Amino acid sequence: MITKRIIPCLDVRDGRVVKGTNFEGLKEIASPVELAKHYSACGADELVFYDITASAEGRDLFTDVLRKTAENVFIPLTVGGGIRDLDDFDRVLKCGADKVSVNSGAIRDPSLIGRAAKRYGDQCVVLSVDAKRIGGKYRVFAKGGREDTGLDALDWIRRGIDAGAGEIVLNSIDTDGVKRGFDLEMLRAVTEVSSVPVIASGGAGSIRDFITLFQTLPRVDAGLAASIFHYGEVSIAELKREMQKNEIPVRIVKE
Amino acid sequence: MTVIVDYGVGNLFSLSCSLAAIGETGVVSSSKELLARADRIILPGVGAFADAMEKLTSSGLSESVCAAAARGVPLLGICLGMQLLFETSFEYGTHPGLKLIEGCVKSIPVPETLKIPHMGWNALSFGKEKHPLFRYVSEGEYVYFVHSYAAADCEKALIAQTEYGVPVTAAVAKKNVLGCQFHPEKSGAAGLDILKAFCEFRKGDL
Image (cartoon, rainbow over all chains, first blue to last red; front, side, top):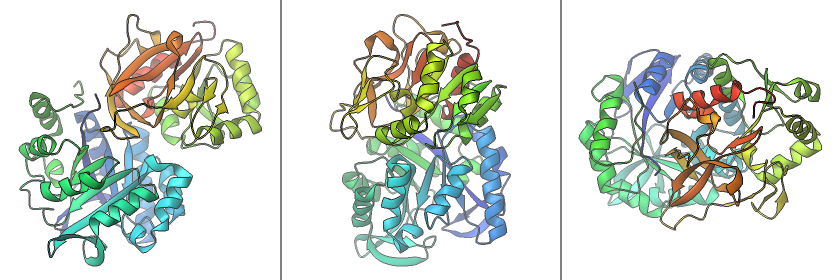
């Protein structure tokens, strides 16, 4: 049986890992390559590298980090952040990325999803959506959660899948950084419209939150988190042992 | 020396890094001359069957690959590269493959509740006899899959299956021609162990 995936997310700026709360107050943590090796050894099923650099120098540092990670870590790597056109896909795929996640770039130009899916295959295109409740609806936000796009999140996800997105990352801004659990209500709504794998993001604070996620929403395929892994609040090896105890299909790595 | 066939399909960076990680000399190349001298050949591939087959044929590399296979050189197809080894694919039409292994490629007949592509980590089962390709891994080992089509009608060559609502072909072998549907270069330590076993095969071993 296919397993539920645990995915640490590494936000990278100027070649270093950072993670903020509610997208603000960024704090530097560690060498991304070392952290990636550590997570892979602990049983991470996949890694997401998010480039939060604005400068050209930072971008070069990022692709350098990516290349060094791909040389040392042999699990799937997804790259996001600043993906605006097919050249950006090319740039990161050549450095070892397996999947590319689009967010603001796809909102600005929705044709990007279809063009990328046609060239690299659906499995390569991940649609990442930052969503927030506004008046009883889920609204898509762009630019790291700062800009209300006016788009309905469920409509946007349907459109993305129709265009060729092979996977959805749903990040709830309402629960992000709060550490009281994933946004089960929003995730349920997304799993109901998604025919492709759904990755839950935003809100995990404990092992229990992952167990609750997979037990409550069997159509969620993976759980993504950042700071709780980086700060050692949740150990991936321990999390996976607990998942196994709770009879959630999981891949256990021999240590 | 193991040659990774570069025919313009997919990303070969991770694959060559994974060979480096197990101490194998891997060369990414589209040179027929190099293919003629290879100790082993890896045929990678992602994307659509018809496109990949067209690129392989028009470049003349399909002949080099088949000639090496006929000489007994160990050949490993990965993902779409494995699917190309079969006689026919029914992905968007009917397309001929390299015909090195009997069988065809069809969409996975999953129950409606399961998602396509079959994407993620799934367990290997080897059946009665374990092929030497798996000599360093155990029954039930997890490897990484991403595919919507799978090999069918290939019972004679089947060496590993996985389960996704239905049994799915995970690996095949016919003498020196091998294929795995999963990505060993993305399957962590288990994947490297499988590549290591492959890179220990020599001409005439299988």
